[in-house]
Length: 299
Image (cartoon, one colour):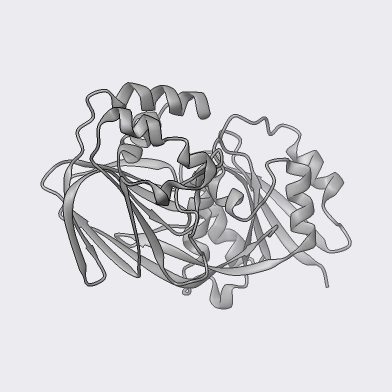
């Protein structure tokens, strides 16, 4: 019996053109293995509704064509056991965003033809997901400078690496590292940090690797904390994002945990899978959800 695939295409994500994606799907999807349908997102949050539709109609695969933000939206219903019983509906990714960090962790090509062929191969991995104040994320959440940058570009129609770098250089001048309290399982830390990244997978996007040792199957989050330092030190150490040695920097501490709680008397900025937010509440609580998502991987 053929498996059913529900493609969700976000036409506004990233910088890639998606006008011909439906033609590529028709041409390169293995029609001996799969029947399929396609829907396009039309507004913010529409992907969540379409994900619930795919589950309710018992599709075997939900293939999201977009970036990390789109992957985040469709994943929330997929990791909810009350909706997706026994993980029947799996996720596939056709990268179409600007960064595509989660797809990179699973070696899924940014080339749509190669990504469709990964779906054809149908190699499934069961992996962890995470929550922040009970809101799902699957790749990386960050509190601090990366959250601020994500927040600043959130409503910008232009995306891509150069926009991210432009906003980063603008915001780093005079950036104030907030004082935060961090509870990591039974370990307490207080200090000033440029960024506290809570990582399920390893890659932010554009092959910028934050947590090279992150394992999406170990039931643990990697907490990568970049301590307060002079601006020149951050610039000097930036190469570590590209050669996967960020954890070796003298300004960085790394822990693994199942539960993390972060608080501050100051306004915080954070992101989940690249979507930025401002936070002025009491606590940010992070929790691992082991073995909660089935993904079609190229690894």
